[in-house]
Length: 184
View 1 (cartoon, rainbow, N blue to C red):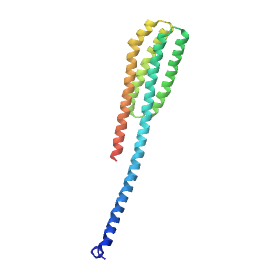
View 2 (tube, one colour):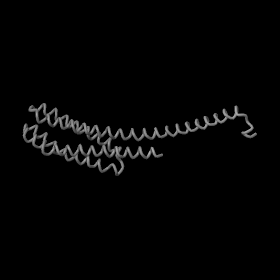
View 3 (cartoon, rainbow, N blue to C red):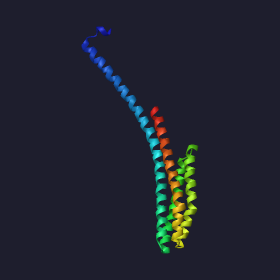
View 4 (tube, rainbow, N blue to C red):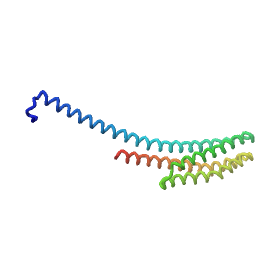
């Protein structure tokens, strides 16, 4: 039987049903593809957002330490200064824990350069921080303030710049991964 022999009242619904069936197949294929893309996007975003959160925690830790140092200079009683020193010590412990969490994520050689810069800046800041603390404990506020403003402030800026470079690095990798996934 040829198509021309079929009456129009049967031909139209047949072709219309065929078009709807093909459109439905295309929608199902597209839906499966989009679900796969969504899973890949979620994987990339969740891993990189965790890295960014860790870096943000490190940055917050730097600010808390700076505030405690400032307070230790302002305060005059040894007990109050001791409390600020304890906050700084706890901040250092937190920094080490956060740093180890971040180290697990940054495993490639591309990651090592900004991570190493951040570690170098942090370790350069430690002895200067210790000097500020010792001057504050001795109530030598002038010397503590001088070291804080001339030495530690620039080292703190270097550390924050290193953390910002690490954020930029993670975001660039995130953008590249998203671009790669969307090309598929």
